[in-house]
Length: 283
Image 1 (cartoon, helix red, strand yellow):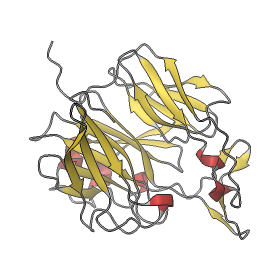
Image 2 (cartoon, helix red, strand yellow):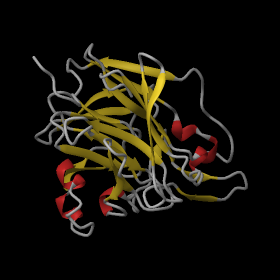
Image 3 (cartoon, helix red, strand yellow):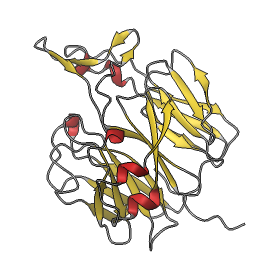
Image 4 (tube, helix red, strand yellow):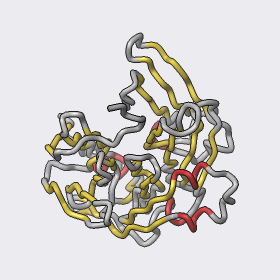
């Protein structure tokens, strides 16, 4: 993502096809858009990126600390989910809500997409439940609240970013700082606008939902072309941009047969709102 300050941020999972991440391979990279050169690389210790870790979404707030903070979801398929907090001034990173209910898959959920239950279907005919931990991520306009949700879950949660950064709060007590917002549909991509509304995909229903700061939810788009909405972005043109990646049609879910259809799509819709800022705006 571009941060509006001349940098492009790239999150390298170092875990192709959800494999075990290459040791010291996972990283967060800042690229200078003016020179097209790498400005900074942040790597992670083995107690942050575990053998089961799959780094996924990232959100930034450059208004706190010396250089800002990044918040990254661990979307593990076979280990604990978590939110990884990174101090951008020195690269120090640590796991929070590790294995908590709010970052874990809903064990009772059976995702259903395009009329079919989503599950791992292997070439040899064997099957297993599809489970994926904390994924969706969005930050409030003032940077004080982080919204998140596991991918195989229909529930929305939030937590104070101050509590996440405060390591004097023991891990066992941190779940008490989590706020439950109710069911918003099963989502992958998620983002907030400048007024604090959260936009979240609903991959089971080919839809996009808007959640207002008072908790009111509404469906703002419903279309058969919205095939697994992901990677949300709000532009200065007040459009919401959404990638539809057809994730549920991948070979792993269909006994090795790839059902995805090209061309892939980038959709947009006018929402009449600006993106949430990540740094102070001087007027």
